[in-house]
Image 1 (tube, helix red, strand yellow):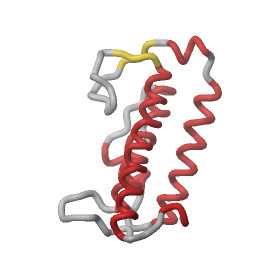
Image 2: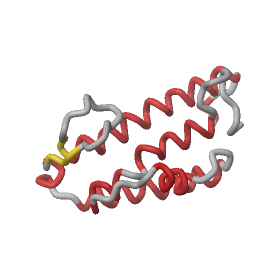
Image 3: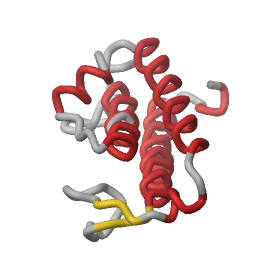
Image 4: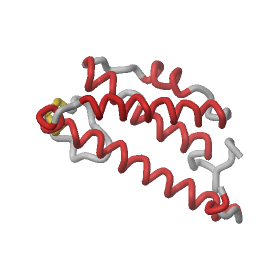
Length: 131
């Protein structure tokens, strides 16, 4: 099912899973060390969108790293304004945002794409509640 999409031109199931990672993978290196990952680096870390087990493993690893970093931050660090740089999805592209807002953006981005995946499954006649 990884290469399936509801219609031509739509993101595949594997593409949707990769998209979940696309926003979260670069977050910690950027906020922690100021390192901006290139598109190539992010794609390399995501791996093949055809490899469900690989994507699942990467999603778990990435979330663990995000939560570990998030848990290490103080309230002051979470409130600290950090530069947004390039357009950051889910925002109105201000010059800076509180660090906590960028973590919230990961969550918002994820539930948006998980909703799409759920719709994909329903459209195939699959009951996502049985997953």
